[in-house]
Length: 260
Ligand code: F6R
Image 1: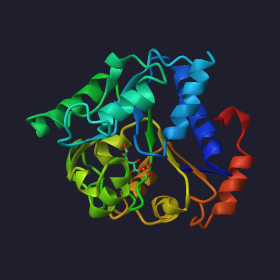
Image 2: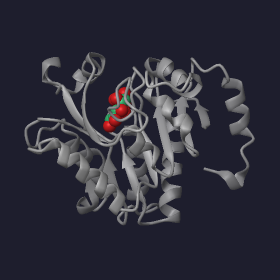
Image 3: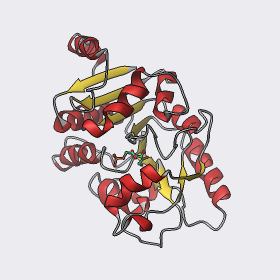
Image 4: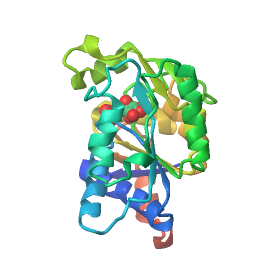
């Protein structure tokens, strides 16, 4: 696993955007996995800036969201369908027809989950999956004890995650209890994983995911199984890492041909 520790959130956004931009430069019809929540917002803003400046063209890209709440009314501004449309599809000038979000309003959620898996496979799999991490170590909405082999399915959000996400809703009770999320097995099939984390609230989760044991109690530790996982964190989110000095040395000595 590559661990890149940078001074602040703007640096995290820039370096993560470099990775995505590099993937798309090599393959203009790349398939991106997109996360929602606060962590990737700066990355999307940086990508949007490059698109607006004419330095990057994402119009050929296909995108798959990681997850969606179950049961929010159609058009709810905090449904991930709405968030992805607002923060990703529009600003990055993606083709809306190529942007996919699990259908959390489906009458048959199991069928919707299977259809989502099929759609990812039909698109040729995900080239680069952007990830955030929950304070409890979840990635996607794979809460602790999620199977490393899990596929897209219905999950129940933990009280901790619902409390963390209450900031997006008028009241904590409004945060749905259930979601559809890509499984850890689905995520691990992406050809590249790119996890971003900022701030001290993520320090324990980052340390557990990067340096802790491989355990379903920290779903983010599944990244240790991936042949090409990059974790980009700011100083505050890196505070719990024991090999901090080593990560800095490795990144400083990274050969130019290996960047970004
Ligand atoms: C969002 C997602 C979650 C978030 C995580 C961190 O699609 O899958 O795993 O990445 O909850 O959320 P933030 O970034 O809001 O701290």
